[in-house]
Amino acid sequence: MRRLHGLLVCASVALLCQTASAQGLAPPPPISPGSPGSPSVEQQQQGETTRRLDEAEQQDSGRNFELFWIDGSIGGSYINMSQFSSESFQIEKASAGGPAFSLGAGVRFVILVLGARLRHNALSTFNMWQINAEAGFKIPIRSFDLLFGLHGGYSFVGRLGDAGLATNTETPASTDAVSIRGFNGGVDVAFDYYVSPLFSVGAGILGDFLFLNRPPVGLPGNYATLTPDQQAAINADPVYQRSGSSAGLQLAGGLRLGLHFGL
Image (cartoon, rainbow, N blue to C red; front, top):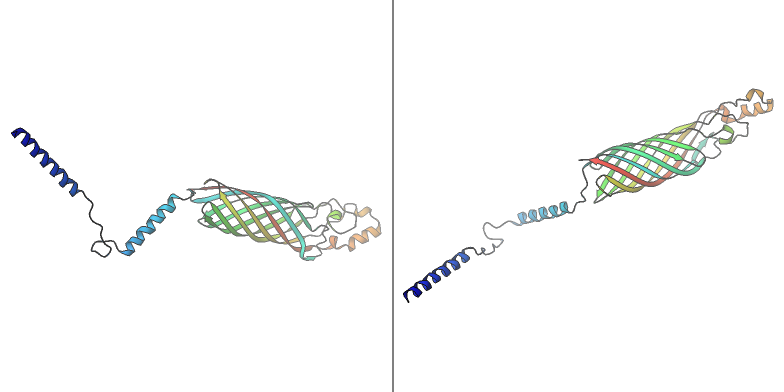
């Protein structure tokens, strides 16, 4: 009996110790906002802001900090050189449309982009090349970039065909090509979707103001063999006597593919 009594006493003491230990680990009662040591409303708001920023960082698209970019585009272009003014330009077909291609490269500083671009307009009646400088703002929206930019540069037509075919004159033509040079400037609007931090696809449009100049056309190679009436017609033709100029518009658009490099 004494042995059984001792076991009961030990069991009671162990149960009491466990109960006391469990009571010691119980969480403290909640602290009311107004009690001493409780966080202020401002601290609670800062904590909530930090939590939301952490969630936004976890949901980020994973894009790198971009420093350099290269992109190309393919689409269409329309040019009308008789839209505003034409002073002895004498180009028979001053408007044309066709496919257009471009290749550009540059740098990016957060939202500011700077670069250069070569554009080729393979129009139905002539080919026009453009070398432009670009500047704009690219606004990131999750996996998208929205671009608003300006550009300007040098435009030139390598060949408009024989003078008689390229101009409004009916005088027999030489085999000399009509050379046209000038300047352009305009605006760009585009968007890019980042398939990955390195690669993007998108689309864009542009509008250009063009000012082009045509130098006097050289005399036909067979001028000396022409009749006096034909020579007189050539001498009176403004295409052969003086240069011409024209101001017009260009509209273009197409798909964009880009590569982006950074940290």
